Length: 100
Length: 115
Image (cartoon, rainbow over all chains, first blue to last red; front, side, top):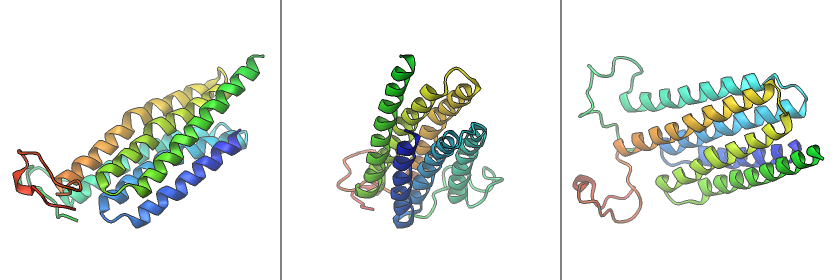
């Protein structure tokens, strides 16, 4: 049962990786990496069940947290070209990034 | 008896979740532009992930593992749409527009541009 689910999740990971390598814009890649992180959380939990070690779920929980923060950090970096001091350097009105 | 019912529920959740995962991944490859690929990523993030987690919850029983799985499910349920929304907002600000003719009168400056 867990083997079948792991196989489905692996196929999904391969297909998402194709989009992440193929994506024409940077936002396609960020979207693919975000979905890939969600699927990675699933496969960590499934491997924990397959090997009868439920402690893997702690790693999965941590990965979910890091995935969200990482996505937001990447997007903020691409929008403001910096991770700190955004508001005084350039406000919201003239903060249009380059069209990729 | 209860084990059989739990196994059947688990199998149903896993197969439905795997279906949604693979359909969403195929959609992310086949759909034509960024805004429609958001739809595929949303299917993976919500339906696929939550159903696979539900199948694992059926197998775990009433233990600490179930609480961790429910925590992961709640967190994914809250943060995945937030992340997808942030990606969409950043792409809109960067000037990416959907394919085809844009009929929004409030969006005159980018009217008709294709990306």
